[in-house]
Length: 203
Image 1 (tube, helix red, strand yellow):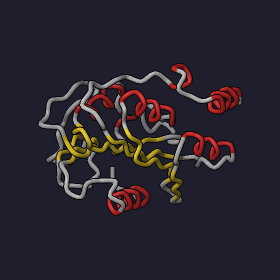
Image 2 (image 1 turned 90 degrees about the horizontal axis):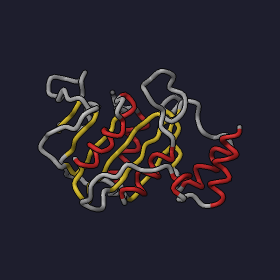
Image 3 (image 1 turned 90 degrees about the vertical axis):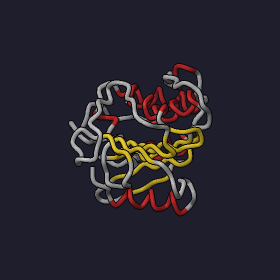
């Protein structure tokens, strides 16, 4: 996919604030022409690797930065895609996800909910460097500091109709990938978040 104005702005800000390494080995899931590094894309340029992300892959990693350029939602076995990113990211490295949240009718197999990223981070000990809720057209960016902040945006009806997540995660340990359990069932939500989950589910 091509880089959007919103995505470019966030990445530029991340580099400027030292959220991302200035010189790094990079693996892209979905070719966005961000860097001249390793790219996996079934419909990319000649230099892209044609690999099936439904299955484990074997390439020369790990990498300092791995980027899901709006690709995971097109992979039926999406859990394997997240596992592959984990395995191909070096300790201390950064994983960047761009994924559809609301709208995006028939775009891919899945629209992803915020709980996925919070629970993924919790299960694997990732640090959440930054989390943005965005819309490409017209451009709109909201930085989300916590699940509570996101909930406040939802309650004020401020989530765009075609929203995407852009989230930066840091891998902190050399541990096997753990498939997360949703926080509402694993007991990781506080009382206010549990109440909001029940109320929003009833609407």
